[in-house]
Length: 414
Length: 211
Image (cartoon, rainbow over all chains, first blue to last red; front, side, top):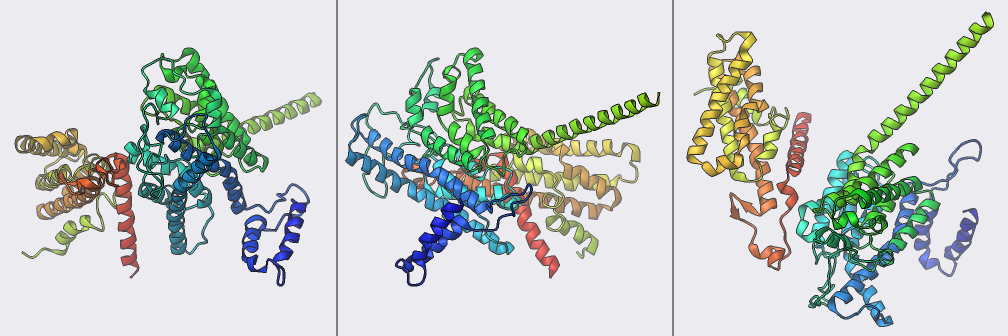
């Protein structure tokens, strides 16, 4: 870190008065505060926190971790569009089509990012102004998550309404950033899901056949193309065994789904960054996967005779929002459990609930959102139980050691 | 007719400063259950107003003859009789609304506002004041119901009193951009709306107090 900082400072000389890049000094300044402020670190004595990390830098790291999923999501939006309109056949990818897919996806996703940030930050600024407080950084990540977890055909005004609802009723009424009980981005999605179910599910929700800003529009879906997500196919099929895609296709993520959730590689890349930098807890992530895997395996063995129950356990982990939720949603430091032991319980139960909802309720092909929101509500209780258990354990230990001391004294007296 | 200050207060208090729903947080369950549409909400409001006012009058009339130890049972009998009368009348003259209100009509008997007013006011006040108090509380309850039902029906189904307000051509299904908010049809959203009204009500009243 120190070396990086020296390099950065050296680079910064170019921006000083008389330097060749002086005109761009405001950019340098902005990035300087972004990356290296605050500089105050604790003295390296005793058990103290050394890093001058604050919530702004934590947030930036999460946003960086989300970038691979976003970029891939953009490409996939265009890719699905080209597939659906028949311009691209599987395996017939060319450089021109590649760029067209990415450009189309970029233009399609960009408005969602703008709307989500404009609405959310607008409300944050108004509230901060009203309360005479500083604007908190909390929305930085939320605003980035929202475009990644909505279907690409959701009308923009719905995203705006849902974002406003979530920021006001899930965050500001509880006291703002750091005080929310529920994950704000997930509340946005839950609001959309319950308020406008016809726009959030079905064959057309995840595939854009219309144009973006008038570009490449007016097309219809070709015959034989299915726009339903693999999990929807599994939930709605009447067969008892259905494997909509194979494992590696699901890992690579060129399948219909919400923008950021399809490619497991991109999500794992972001997850690695979060774990290496210590922003997110690997315990939560791992336990979500373990809980989900074990539950799905149990359903494989003993479950009802439906396609969802027969779907192999490893498929459950890579399809739909499971991986995205485990890496970016369950680990939200505000709404998840905080005790180390609590994180295991919290994660395992999220995985368990997600699979139970998927398998036992065909009305909800995707269970991750509801599972995480449910566990958000329970997380403080888990923490409380863990803390109480620890207190009891230590109390017992103290009492026992006291007892043995007394007994040994007695023994000495005799 | 000149009303004494106390009578006026008995009527006006529950409408705003001492509203049963907004301030005492009573009668919330039925406020959530019957406010999906305006029409049943209004019928519910009127029914509750009549029953509170009349039961207040009856209990106030016989308040000096009621033995203290069995007063709750006697109050319940009075309320039950009135609820039965109202529900029979509704079934006779507004059958579809009565069906929409279903059990909630009968459950007026358990409405906290009713027993609260009988115990807190009618047992200790004269007939005129009790009547005005019942009227005020019933109307105070009703206007919340109407406001919540207005928002829920307009945004949840695009209608008011069953008539389409939002043009059909706006809907996505017809090539437009708009869609009804399904959340509004759920009781959860009614709770949030009541919360918003309480929020606004407190904000306004606090400001007035400070002046």
